[in-house]
Length: 99
Image (tube, rainbow, N blue to C red; front, top):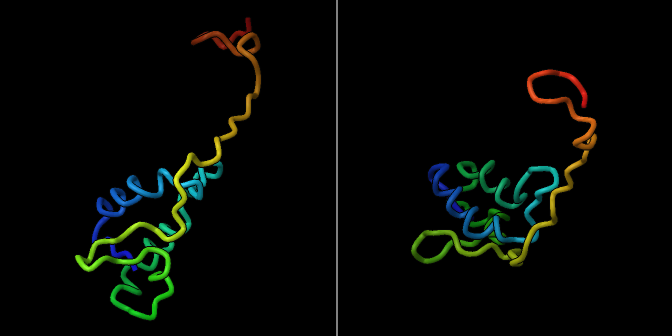
């Protein structure tokens, strides 16, 4: 199981792998579910050879986490931003009036 001793090491791993993976959820803002599981159970399962998270993000001989086994490079699905109006119906800056 990937062990992250602090938030910075987790963020570095996430930037290297999760941010470039198609499984990263941009739509709902949750990020990578596998990375979340590792963060939540980081201290509970560290060093446990029977931990199922070992199958997802293995650890190399040097003790550092390797590439996630579910990593598929590519862009995550695009975020859908709902438009609630048009520029013509938006209030003018600082006046509260509609133009």
